[in-house]
Image (tube, rainbow, N blue to C red; front, side, top):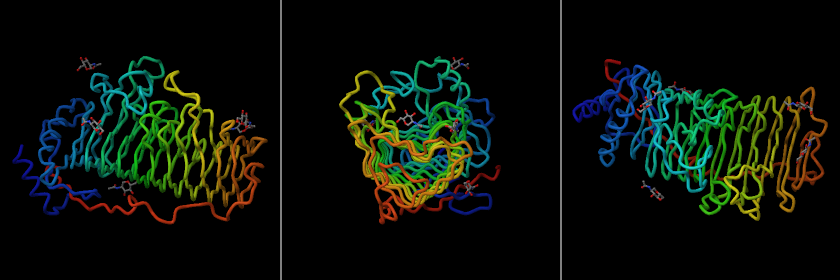
Length: 457
Ligand SMILES: *[C@@H]1O[C@H](CO)[C@@H](O)[C@H](O)[C@H]1NC(C)=O
Ligand SMILES: *[C@@H]1O[C@H](CO)[C@@H](O)[C@H](O)[C@H]1NC(C)=O
Ligand SMILES: *[C@@H]1O[C@H](CO)[C@@H](O)[C@H](O)[C@H]1NC(C)=O
Ligand SMILES: *[C@@H]1O[C@H](CO)[C@@H](O)[C@H](O)[C@H]1NC(C)=O
Ligand SMILES: *[C@@H]1O[C@H](CO)[C@@H](O)[C@H](O)[C@H]1NC(C)=O
């Protein structure tokens, strides 16, 4: 196998016709194909062992320029497997990774410390299809190759209450730095699609994520207690929030105390009739701050950038900057929910009150809207320093009679139609706040890397 790796390595140094290029945080010195490790792309053979032995072997090259594992054209059935550091998983454009529908192909792992339990069911949870923990410099990318979670049986078993553990996510990385997930098509995840947790320096771009709009909890991208994150150029159709920024659940999240912060979300296109384009929460107990959202398009979506929180969560959502939204066919444009409920267990602290402040929305155009705003703070805990500027909302043919439903909030507005509620009618600046200086993660340049495809392809 070493010789195969070195042959591929030498091919990789030339740019033969038939080789692909991709953008990576780092290019790798060594390459191997899944077929070098017994992989069979027939859609029937289980490839978990092939992935595991390939990655185990390539791990030994981490300190010698790193390695990439190429998933060639074919249908590659697999259970859960784990990535390694200084490593790229490259999924060819004609390759489809198929998630096994067999529960035995997903090991059980401990709940996240900031959640205290599995999200669906108490206790351990199934490890994600593609998993990684405590890694440095890891890339999952491709020429828009596909990862299909084959979620149908998971969804029906979940809805019927047949699952004794929390469903696996499609891709989850824990405690990792320098992470890239890009240029992939993610289809029918059993639950959330992309879940970086306790990670720093994360780039997620060029993903197409699809699941039926009726499928349960198929959130697109959920950065959770992560810092320095760039989420750009993604297209998501799903049964839950297209993006959901999180930071742990009630007393467990408060104790773990790790915020999600310094996140840029740019050029998201979202379709999600029963959920938000971007949710902040509901699990936000470690805090959410400095989130910059630019150029969002949402169609047939319940709401745009929604804050979800409640008594017991604690934590904060502050310094949120939203600029440029083009919305079509929405139930709400603005939505803040202060009574979300959904507690991990009865042990939550009823005195843990979330702090919500400094929420800025500017340059919003929305058409075919039912209710412009549903903004509900918490009695005794006013959501404050809300700013709206340059907002134009056109209503649907049968809109709600009350366009601004505001309670326990405070803020200002400028150039907003229809006329905002009294609590937001103070005169605001012609443009709400937006940070002038880009985040460092925004400036990180990706390199152009080669994938040599063997001539037999
Ligand atoms: C699931 O995998 C287990 C362990 O490999 C095996 O015993 C079982 O037959 C599989 N179930 C199905 C439905 O294939
Ligand atoms: C991963 O890092 C976390 C946090 O530093 C640590 O608690 C955990 O033990 C590490 N796990 C492994 C497998 O090294
Ligand atoms: C992958 O998809 C993105 C987004 O749809 C597109 O811009 C890009 O050209 C595609 N790349 C390849 C190699 O097909
Ligand atoms: C206004 O919001 C409250 C909750 O804050 C809700 O109970 C009520 O039904 C809403 N009214 C309308 C007309 O949307
Ligand atoms: C829009 O509002 C009307 C009147 O309140 C209601 O009957 C209708 O169900 C709403 N439509 C949607 C999509 O929420």
